Every structure is written in C-alpha cells, then in structure tokens.
Length: 107
Length: 392
Image 1 (cartoon, rainbow over the protein chains, first blue to last red):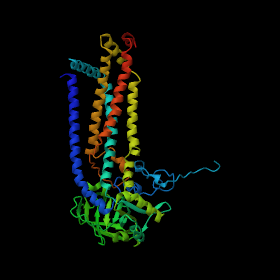
Image 2: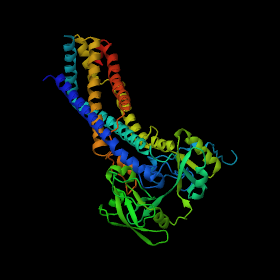
Image 3: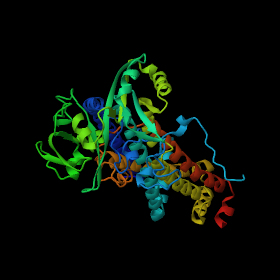
C-alpha cells in the first residue's frame, strides 16, 4: 500500500473513532437528562446550592455561600492554606461596590 | 491526473518524514500531549459547567444570609414573616445546614436538617429521607458510607457527637445513589429537630433563609428590598450561584490558567522553534528538489502536507485520548487537583457535554499556526537560488 494510503486510512480510522465518541456523547447526554430530573428533585427538596467538588474547606465545599473574606481564612492577605483554594477562586468581590484603598503612612 | 500529482507529493512528504523518524515522532508526541492537556481541560471544565447549570437551576431563587463582622452568622427566623410580605415573594423557608468535622476519619461532612418529602420513587435515593420531626433517622451520601466504612445497606447506625458532647445515633434509612454523587457525596440529611440538638442551635434561628420568588425577573429587585430592610443580610441570587461555577471552571480560573496556559506556552515554543529556521539538512533537501526541477509551489505543497500530517495526526490522537481520559477514566489525571485535601469527594462520572465551538477554536489555534510555521521558513528557502541553498 502506498504511504499516502496508509495516512488516509489512519485519518479515516481516527475520524470514525471521533464519530463513535460523538454518538456515545449524544446518547449519554440524553440519558443524563432523564437522571438529572431525579437529581434536580433532590436539589429542590434539600434546597442545595453547591456541587460536592472539594470538601476540604467550607469555602471550597460551598463556594457560592462562602463569606466575602473566605479567601483569606484568618486575615486579609493570608497565604492560601488549602490546595483546592488555587482551583476554586474567592467569590466575586464586585458586589461590594466600594474600593478600599490601603495607604502606608506618609505616602 | 492533478490529484495523482498531489498524492505523489504526499507520498514523498511521508517518505521524507520517515527519514527523520525520531525527530518527527518526538514532535508528534509533544504536540499530542499539548492537545491532550488543553482539550482535557476544555472537556472537564465545560462538562462541569453544564452539569452545574443543569442541576443548580432548581436551587432556591434567593438565599438570605446574616452577616456579622464580615462573617456568615445564624439568622433569626422571626424575620421570615417580614420577608414574606415583600411583593413578589411566594415563600420563605429556613435552611438548617452546617459542617461536621469527623476527627476519626479527618473528613468534613455537610449536615442538613430538613423535613423532606416529595422524594418518593426517586431513582437516586434508595430508601427514604427523614421527615421534619422524626428522631434519629438519617439519609447519607455514598462518600460518608465509604469514609466511615459503614455498610451501604440500609439499617446501619451512624454516630455523631452533639454540641453538648453527647453521642447521637442515627439509623440510616436512605442512601444517595452514585448517580447523584456530585451533589450528595458528603451529605447527612437528618430531621430539623435532630439538627438543632446536634449543633446546639436556638429554636428561633436558622443557618440561612431560602426565598422563593414567583416571577424570576423580579429576583434582583426583591434581593435589593431585602438588603434595604435588613442591611446586615447578604442575599445570594441563584444566578450568582451558577455564575460562581462559571468562574470556577471559566477561562480565568486557576485550573485553566495552570494547565491550559502551560500547554499553550509549550505549543508556542514548539511552533516558534519550527518558524525560526530550517535545519541544514532540510535546506539541502529543498535545494536538491529545486535543482531537479520542482517548482516553488510544489515545495510549498510538500511543506503544507508535512505540517498537516503532523498537526492533524497529533490533534486527532490528542482529542481522542482527552475524551477517554475525562469521560472514561473519570478525569483521573485532573481530579486530584480538584480533590485537594478532601477526604470525601465524588467519583467523577462526567456526562460528555462537548462544546464543538471550543474544539474548533483549539483546532484553529494549533493546526493553522503549526502549518504556517512549517511553510514560512520553507518558502524563504525555496525562493532562493538552489545552489546557494545547498551550500547553506
């Protein structure tokens, strides 16, 4: 077989795999929509607000409920303690709508 | 005939690539790794974002927290009536929840005190949840059962230490099935009365309030009114909750920056190395081809094929491997970053939501620049006199 034939076969096989994966995705998503109705019911009844992604700190377990100082567990500017703190960022501070300027003495 | 010419050039290109087998396999491996990393992050973040949108759309419209000294504090349930009188509010419910640190297994649990009904015949819950005033009954998540090595069968007993130091025992009447792990892995659902005894919460207090709104468009106005009437409160809108997850898995999140940018920089170095010049051997090859009668356009076509063969093969392999990694192996390489020091964490069974738009962007950001960086230096060499090129 010519080398170009081998190359086209390789690309063809890859395309076929990608097509199969797309079909698997479509089926999985449609099946998930059925299961998610049951999960949504649990979310509604238990009034849940967050996903269980990391349970090591309260602000990574419930990022949407964390208080505005949650990124600085002990004092403003304290060094991040938990590794997931670098994955799950602090809450959006825009709602504070106030700029706090800290100036050193004499500046 | 014209097609045959292109095919011949492709044959020659593949032959030429095989001559530098080691170098080209190295490039394909690095390129595949770059695509694999970038698309793994894209698959994971998009899938989790979609999951959050889908599952959190039924969470309460507004959560009202009480703040004191910048920290979340228990809220009085006496203000429920006043909030309920705000036009547009269809209901106010107290939420009782908190964390329980189990020093035995060094894990944090989330405890919910609720009188839950309406979960009968739910496929993600085997057994049932406690009712509002039912004592010593609990429904638990899979993660708790695994951390406490409790038999996953119903009827086992869970012991928790109350605020006054006494031990409370809970008969497990319900276990959340693994399908719902992403929402329930660390949950212990007990009755409202038991929750108050466990954490020592006063009768007229709650962790926060869930406010239901009849018309969703009015939610920001109602939140504003709550904030005006109770300046020490912090209303959290459902939109904000969903936006939080967009931020966690969004473009600017730590996960994306750390992995995606790393992969992108690696690719830029790879492309830059290609674009800055040809090796003496490659220049000589172009010179010989020109000397034996190849047109400049033929040389450029050969280089186009070279770029396409390497980048397309790497892109396809990278994408397929990333899909297998995220959706078949549960993001085994990325999940540890999300778990951190968590003792209880869900097993990621992600639904393969795929954003073709992002994949197309990734494709155009990698394949096109790579082909360009292969063609441009060759174009420079191929327009030079063959004799000069061959002499270097």
